[in-house]
Amino acid sequence: MENYLIEVAHLVLRYFHVIAGIAWIGASFYFAWLDNSLETPPKVKAEKGISGDLWAIHGGGFYEVAKYKNGPEHMPTTLHWFKWEAYTTWITGGLLFSLLYYVGADVNLLDGSKSELSKLAAIATSLGSITVGYIIYRLLCNSPLVKNGLLFAVAMVLLLAVWAWGFDQLFADKAVYIHIGALIGTCMAGNVYHIIMPGQRYLVKEVEAGRIPDPAVGLKAKLCSIHNNYATLPIIFIMLSNHFSHTYTHQYGWLVLIAFIVIGMWIRHYFNLKHRHINKPSVLISGIAAFFALMLAIAPWDSFAPRVAATDVAQVSDVQAWTIVEKNCTECHSATPTSTMFASAPLGFTLDSIEAVQIQHEKVYSRAVLNKDMPLANLTNMTAEERETLGIWIENYRLKKAKL
Image (cartoon, rainbow, N blue to C red):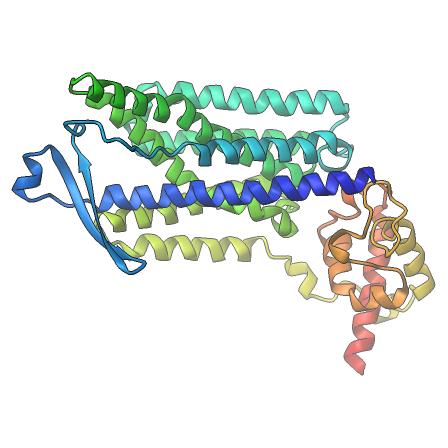
């Protein structure tokens, strides 16, 4: 029952985290497009203090949107704010992160082959590093560097690279990407809480008092919104990354992550330019080309070549292979798991017989032999020799299938 309740909590938190994330990122996309698409208003609107407007059609109706240079003459009765999308995403993400990587630290956070951190020390290191990373980001935002967009972006990428490398030295491969995601998400939510919302409250207060707001406050809030906008594609990738073990289990997985972040920011740059009527297809094309170049660079090329000679392959029997699978896999991947971590087989993936292993041999090879991210946290202490032996048996099975 305890495992079931944890799974329910996992489901609820992930579900609402994704929903809130869609709302937050969608709002970021929309307002970036809106602000970049505003056009010079006609004279009659400009005289009212409107600095830009646009017309749109959606859902069977026309919409007219206008942006005031300073603020409306009178505050409207209803004013829509956008904050809970960000707060809900960060809160649910923090709770989900804590459930998986702190409550489940033994499985998802710790890696004895990298460091000998205790559970408590690992959690403290995790929290401390994210906090320090956010403080550095805030300091950089208050420095002259923020006035140069390119240099600021380079500084942030270098900061993330140092943090990713550090996480990779201490934590399990699977945890590295999510920790960088937690740091980026904290910076994004911090922008909303510390800069954007106070700036908006200031604007409202000044307009209600009949004063002209200081434009510097609005410009600072807008700059933080732009930072968040460029972080959207990298954060989406990180949210999905745990489904693609070939990325985070790579020998230089931390560097692969930084490459994904840069590519995501570059592709986002294309759309931000396009919204301002600056069409540079070369930016998008080069971003997509970089993505596929990265995929080629981290591809498991060795797996395409025969790993052993046919005479050597035949030395591993079904009994030997099943002994390895039964020892290392069926504790979780069974119709009736004996592991205390799972009430049912993860993703419904069961290996209760040698025939089931034969059917799923490609997945078994990918996760247990090639990427080595299974068994989870290597809780069964699967040895390198066992992985090699299982790989030889799978090659044996492939050769047999090829002859049929």
